Image 1 (spheres, rainbow, N blue to C red):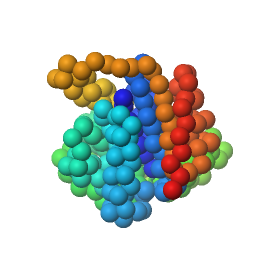
Image 2: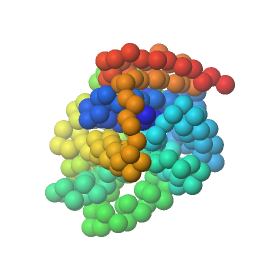
Image 3: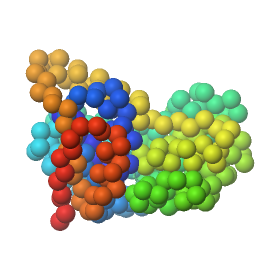
Image 4: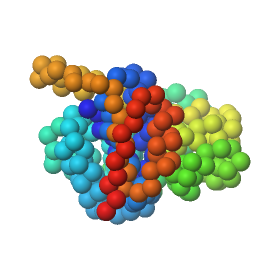
Length: 260
Ligand code: DGL
């Protein structure tokens, strides 16, 4: 079973890509929306949540956990890998493809404050963005818009323009989505930055997850006990989560609550 978790519905952008390439797997998705957003939270607090959620998902039979949140990856992925023995997949800031492909050598990165502060982001930009101007912007208010299902142009354009405006003005031709919530605003971002190509790391993360899962099964000669199921768990109100998951997943959905 593939488990994913995020501060809210954002990780569904990774789930969506997984379903495209592995539609008959069993999935369990945890939305920690009672504690959303993670973006400005102290690292220790995010680690505690990540530890609890991962323990719960593993207790329910997860073979692999996707930390489908850039902020939680930055705060907790090394910590989780030390605590548990099953594989953990994190979100990679897609600076490398953006920097390599960019013709203007100016790229924009949209992420949370927590992601920008993390070692993973710093190391990736030092390694791959040499000779490239990187315009970093915190996507202020964007997570909240997605959590409330307000992803239409009229509702989201003002907040999106505020973040991507400086990128387009400076000539960025690539915009990296460094938060898993942002792909749900991709159409709005495209309209606000028509000359930039949007880079979403979710398809690459999904592909990598499946490769790691399959390699693990080969190593253990493990039987696949797949039925193509989806369980959704949330720590808060689950109405938007269910609606968005059902737009991705055709089969039956089992819903649980983890309200503390
Ligand atoms: N989806 C998260 C991320 O990728 C969430 C951000 C937040 O909760 O602030 O960073």
